[in-house]
Structures are given as C-alpha cells and as structure tokens.
Length: 484
Image 1 (cartoon, rainbow, N blue to C red):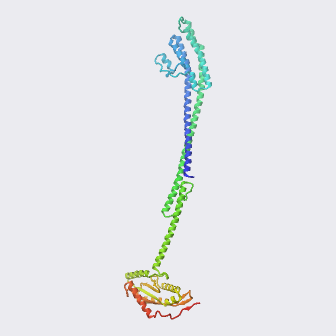
Image 2: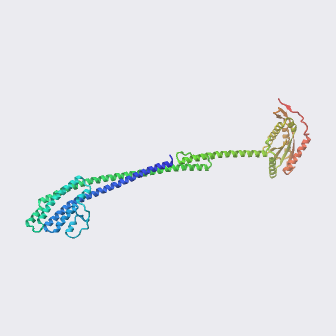
Image 3: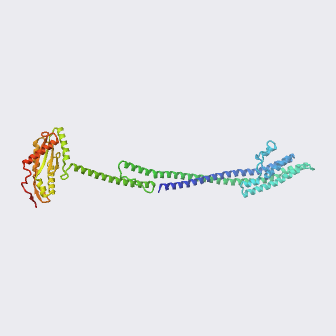
C-alpha cells in the first residue's frame, strides 16, 4: 500500500477517533450539566416547599400579632405575604427566613423588588411531577382553609368605623388562632408538604444517581477513546517509522555497497510504496550502469589487447614472432649496461641464411615463410632463457648472449646453432624436404667493441667473412628430397 494511502487512512481513523472523543467529551459535559441541574432542582424544590410552609407560618404569625396588638401594619404584612405568594407582588431579592423578623424589628428594609412569580409558578418551573404538583395543590387548598380561619379571627378584632371589638371577640379570635381546629388545620398543611418533600427527595436522588451514572459512562467512554486514540497514534507512528526507516536503511546499505565497489547490489524493495517505486527506478538505473560498466570494461580490454598487439607488432617480427630490430637494440643496450656494471661479457651473433633465396624463388613465398619460421623456432629453442633471438629482416637474425665469459664460449654457441640450422626442413605444401645453412658472425663486448653499434658492425663483418669462406651463394650441394 502506498505511504500516502496509509497516511490518509490513519488520518481518517484519527479524525474519526477525535470526533468520537469530542462527542464523548460533549456527552460528559452534558452529563455534568444534568448532574448540576438535578442538584440545583433538588435544592430549589426543597427551598420552594420550605418557602410554602414558611409562608404559612408567616401568615399565622402576622394574624396572631394583629389579634394581639391590633396594629394595621401586621394586617398589611399579612396581605403582602399573600400577594407575594400568589405572584401579585414582587419578592424582594433578600427574601429569606429572617426577612420578616427583621421587618418586624424595623432593623432592615427590603432590598428592592425581585421577580413577579407566584410560588405555584415557581414550582411548575422547577419541573415538578404531576403527583408532586397534586400534593402541592392539596397543601395549598388546606392553606386556604387555614387562611379562612385567620381572616375570620382578624375580622373579629379589626377596628372599623362604628365597631369596637369586645373582650369576647378577642377571646374568640385567640381561640380560632390557637385552638385545636387551627392546629389540626396547620398539621394538615404540613402532611402533604412532608410527602412532597419525600417524593421530591426520592425523585431527585434518582435523577442525581442517573446523572452520576451518565457522568461515569461518559468518563469511561472518553478514557477508552483516548486510550484507543493514543494506541492508534503510537501504532501509526511505529508503522510509519517502519515504512520510512527500513527503506531508507536499505537504500543506505545499497549506497554503501556501490561506494565499496559492489555494483551488482540492488535495493529490491517491494514496489507497493513510493520507496518501492524509487527502488525500482534505482535498480533499473543500477542495471543500466552495470551494463554500461561491463561494456566499458570490454572496450578497455579490447583496446588494451589492441595496444598490446600493436606494441607486440612494433617490437616483434610479424612472421616469426621473434623480437624485431627495435626490441633487439633495447635489450642489447640493457645487456651492455648490466655487463659494464657487473664486469661481465656480452656476445652478439649475426646470422645470415645460405640457400634461402633459391627455396623462396623456386617454391614460393609460403615455403620461404615456413623456412623462416622453422629457423626462428630452432634458434629460440637452442639458447638460454636469458638470451635473445631476433629477426632483423629478410633471412638475417641476431642472437644476444649476455654473461659470456670468453670468445670460445661464443664460438661453441655459434657451432651449435650452425649444426642445428643444417638439419633438413619439411615443406608440407610441396611435400619436400630442403636443407639450408647459415653464415654466423661473432662480436664480443668488451674485447672487440664498447657499444652496440660497433658490436653490430663487427658481427656483420665477421658474418660476411664466414659467408665468403664457406662459398655462400652457390647452389646447395644436396637437392631437395621429395617426400611421399
């Protein structure tokens, strides 16, 4: 799979996991909000139920104070409590359990108006159930009945034009506000409020527990997604590292192999990635380079062989393969230099064949060439490895004999070569056996000459002396022998 495809897939998975993580966090935040709302509703529900019971107690307090003291402000406070409970008057912002105690002692004034909402509306807004609202309505109805007794008692002692309360009216009013019927009606208000509080506490506790479970579930979900996201990130990093590091290591090893001269090395990476495509291109390039290097080596070898051939032809006779005059001069100079340095002697033999021209003229150049090859082979095979046999042209040969101690030693070599050259030579083209001879001149360093030119000249002159003495140029004494 291509690396860019892998990255796209890993990125897609990361995006999905991040999306799930965000969803889990949103769910967690929503669960926390639900938990906070449940706790807030629980507090507000208890507070509203307590306010309803508190307002009943406050109404009782104001009614009793009015009956005892007949001060109009208590009646006004009573009316204010009813209007605030019914939502007909705004509730002060600092309305709490100590509000009316402070107002009665005139220690603190109201801190400005609050919201215009009845206790019933506030309870409905708090999300109470139908059962809880039924209990609330029951408590409210019983509160209305209690208020009827309170208004009746307050009416008995209220001072009106033309009416003055009598002592029995005060006793009756006190009996209404402190009698058994009033206490029983007061208890009837507390009973549904207690059931309301218990139902509210049970329901809100269940909501709180459910919200806590949702928070835990969301937390576990977020933690699990975070763990999967982290593991996937680590796995993706490991896979990406392997997808990049290993191909780079293979390419580095290949480069080191090429640098060390192993041009046959190849990367051989799978072609399913970008590095594989690069590897294929590199391997193709390496194949082309190796092929070019092979061709270049072949061309160098061919040129080297050609130069060796040219060099050989420049220094050797093309027919016999013996050193030519150029190479003979070089070896003679070296032999003379060594002999002078070591105090040794050097002999030079100048050989000219007798009877070669008639064979060449009568039987052709091919037969003449055969005679020259045989002569060259016989001469080369008869001397030492340190000696040099060469052809200087036509039927003339030179033999360089280093480290020759005396003239007699050179004469022995000359006699040996002379006897060897007189042996018959077979011509396969004409199936004939011919016989030739040679005139051999000798010149020796340092007795006769001190340099190569003088040696060559003296050896040539000595050869002509022997040629003249042997009657060279006359027809061979024994005619060719026909074979087969």
